[in-house]
Image 1: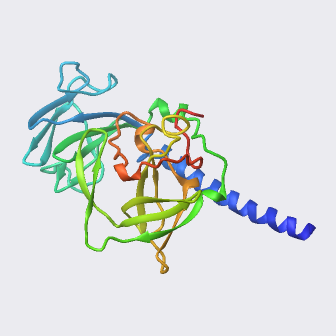
Image 2: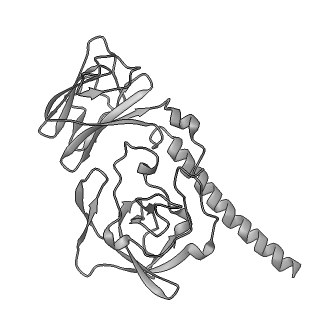
Image 3: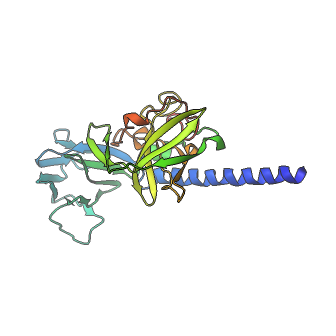
Length: 283
């Protein structure tokens, strides 16, 4: 009996360690240079020239620590060029070309830097924007982590996976109103308390599915707009492991400058999933 209890304790310890390691990597990714805690601005470009700097009269107003006039970003035919002010040393980070024609072209962007600030171009539907980061953002120092529900193995569910008989898409809308059609990989189908539930999944890349879902804890214990889940692709038995203990907050839970996708209507669950991350405000 004692040996059995020790074995159970050992197995539970391994499970706990696995989740703690995963959670620590998650926290590190939020704090990283490419994480969501250091976002400092999001500015939508208009066609033509867009002057930027800290001067309040600029179309794009950067933080007060930056020069009043920094340069001009010109959007033309889906491409963005940069003309820096002569006195302002803007560094270009991810390019070998010192004077590129464009800082955004064919979906690829060059990161620009001044001091602790970095910015680059994003595209959302037909809109083009400047995403600004501050590597010394106060949120990095103030971040106290993310509250979670206690680990519950009952929320690690083996679901069957149903692929569409013919290729189809699902409609995904983001928080800025952009609507897109995403290829549907299939539905993860599972039972909870005798009832069947289905979650639509798209392809996250790197051998993972992407599921945006909302449940009855949303707006209470968890983030109001829903949460993300990244299960592994179906196994050879056409099964998917839905480990809701690894459900995470979307970037918008950490910054007003993110452009998160929202759950499709069919992924709004009428049950409470008391697993995974709680609202980012709940420390």
